Amino acid sequence: MQPVLPAQPSEPTIASLRDVSGDSLARYWTFYWAVASAQLARWLPRRPSRVLDVSGGRCAAQAAEAGHTVLEVRDPGRADAGERPAKNTAIPLIGDTGTLAFLTDASMDAVIAENRVLSRHLATESTVAEIARVLRPGGRVLLCVDSLTLGMALLAERNYWAHLSDVPSAEVVLVPWPDGTITRSFSAHQLRELLAEAGLEVEWIRPRTVLSPSMVEHVLADSPRALARLVRTELNAPSPDESLGIHLLASARRRGKA
Image (cartoon, rainbow, N blue to C red):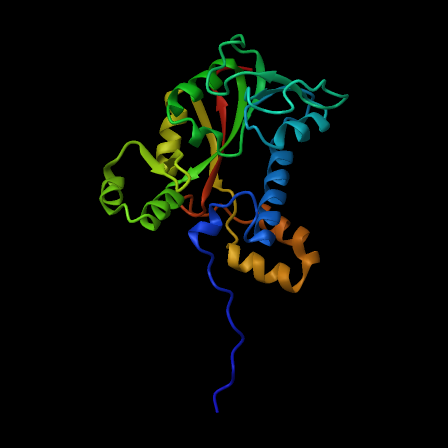
C-alpha cells in the first residue's frame, strides 16, 4: 500500500495575484506588505532628508515617522486631501503625480515611486524624467513596477495571443486589465534602459518577493507567528533572477556629485 502524501498547496491563479488589495491570498499579501515596509526602511536615507512620495500609498507616513520631511503628492480625488497634517506626518500636496512642474530642479534628496505608480503612468519616460529633474545630484529613487511576467500572464488569461506573440520584440508592453484600466509592464532590461535614459544610475533591480505565494500561504497557515522569520528570509535572500515575481523593485541614483 502506497503511503498517502500530504496535499501540496496549489499555485495561486493570476486573478488572485493581481488582487493587491489583499481580498484573496490574505496571508501572502500580509507578508508582501510587511516585506515592502522592511525594504523601504532599509532604503530610506540614514539622515533626515527631503523626500517626495508619489506612490499614493502607505510609504509617506513611514518615511515621515523615520524623521524625514516628506512631501506627499496626492490625487485631486483623494477624500482626505484637505486634512491638516499632524506632527511627524507627510505634508499633502494636491497635484498630478505624473508631472512635477510645481517642484524646482534638484530640490529633493529622495523620491518614492512605490505601489506600481509608474506602471499606471503609461508615458513612464516623462514621469521618470521629472523625477530625475527634481532629485539633487546623488539623490535616489525607489520604484516598483509591474513585471513582464505579470503582464504576460494577464494577456494569456484574457486570450490575447496576438499581443503575446509581439511581446518579445515590443519596446513598450501595455496590458489591458479586466476592470478596463491599462498598465505598463517591464522587463528588468527595459527598466534599466528607462532609468539610464533619464540620467539615473541603477543600483539594483530585484523582484519584490522571491518566496512563492503558495509557500508563504502554507507556512503562515501552519504557523502565523512565522511572518517575521519569512520577512527576514526574503530580505536576506541572494540576488535572484530579476525576471521572477509579479512586481519589480528598483533603486537608482541621479548621476553627479552630491
